[in-house]
Length: 116
Length: 116
DNA sequence: TCCATATTCAACCCCATGGTTGAATATCAG
DNA sequence: CTGATATTCAACCATGGGGTTGAATATGGA
Image 1: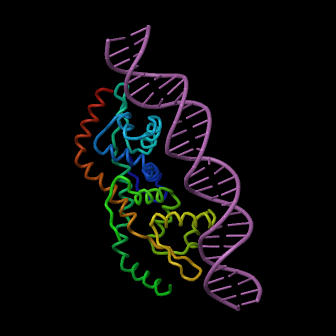
Image 2: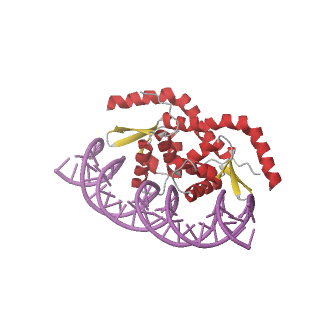
Image 3: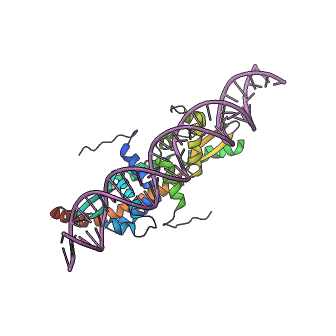
């Protein structure tokens, strides 16, 4: 399983963020919060072609954001937690930062303002 | 200042995620965690041209991820909390979901496995 | 004033990517 | 077997965006 804790390259985080940056894909992910769904179901709310959605799903799947389960002719997509957890972990690193440096930063900005 | 709480379109979240999805820009943001810096300083660790970094900074600034303060001829960039907070908030929405549906999902996946 | 430093602007290039359409594949139902 | 449903594959197109280079702007220092 290899729980790896690297920080600099982080290809998984990269893929997750990239996948999720697209509005369409994000809408798909959000919709998938309400439970698994088939490709056609997922494509329904969009004006784009089914193939378009299919490609988006492939990207999401490639980033590990969802797992595909073939049940007969229909593919059922379900959300996978890890990638989003990674994103949350990454953004959480800043939270500490804000609280720590908030006052220092504020002071700094005040200084800048003087010189402006 | 208009603190708006909409969820579907979320152009700000969109811009933030887009900006941060690029590895270079993410590295810049991470570097900026350690305090404000000038354009040249930020560009130093990268092999790319200064202009390239300048463009990335513009994107980050446009997404509200950093604030630029001109001090003489040099521009000082500092991190801004809101966009990353938005990202964190977004990814946090899923946390509840995991814990809630985790068992149900596991069961569901087991079911799929049977049929496979 | 003159030159170096710090940065952006403008134009350009190239490739990745979101999107399309049309055909292929596979499964289900008569 | 035949046809309808569910989905992908393959080829293609057009735009955007990451990157470059070269010139412009502005500030600082001698």
